[in-house]
Image (cartoon, rainbow, N blue to C red; front, top):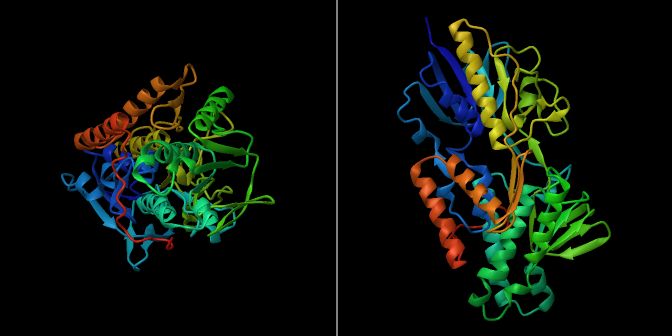
Length: 420
């Protein structure tokens, strides 16, 4: 009798949690991902803003399962699923059969029908995105130091972040501190403190997923850091020279997109309904329609909690879903009753604003300021993989806190999207 074959597509939080929780189960696991590393996305903005290096928030997937002979890792891209044949199709033409399939393929940034904006306004979902944004930010200051035309220099020193969710707020706060605190003494021809950091949000407030008083505190803190917050402004165009908001054009050579997400094409592979963001509409057991042996998790899935609220696309939610699917698989293999419907347990919302302020909403308690920042930091260090990563990130943060010097300001790679 052959071992039960579980195919997991995606090495994010949901996929890795599932593989971890299946340790010791009578299964053979194939883990497929387009990249060879697991990425700790909550700290990706810190790579983009020169606080951390790439190796501090990403780990080779193969190294994580080197002592698990039942786990096979494949660097490949999935392009389709044959539900009748129980196979997935890879981009190179190969197929892989499965007994149970788990799609944990995540999401990318969405431009609401304007994909042509991506080359000039990159989003932040991958290490490549982060290093591209970091390079553009640093090059902007370097080019401004050389520029003799005041109008061009002002455009180089204007940084526009579109979208005031957690990613946009965190990016704006750190770029402001970089310009106003870290860099001023290093440049001679320009005053980096005159840089403009503009955070644009189409809605009425920043961090709309938080309660209003925490949202208001975040906006005040951003403005104290020198960020210009523009609410109720929808972006209507992005070009290499700047951003259009309604009838207003803002010259800017560095634009970052943090305004929306689009799920992977998993719904198309399965031929099942999806919501406007492309997420597969799953049942309470995280299964798409008419597919008892397929599960969809993380940012790829639309599942509700507390009646009418979608489970948020955050790391704790994805990890809970991965753990749930592992329990279902174990129960099935043991011939036991399945654990019932997936129940999401919200552990709180966190966001940082600069290097020493944050907001936390645990529901029963709400915190702000430096205490919240320390709790935020401890929580993130705890979820990093391995003692080395925890020590490296803690040391980087301590150095930055004491010296006000960002530790990852090397311009090393060629522009991956366009030349500045």
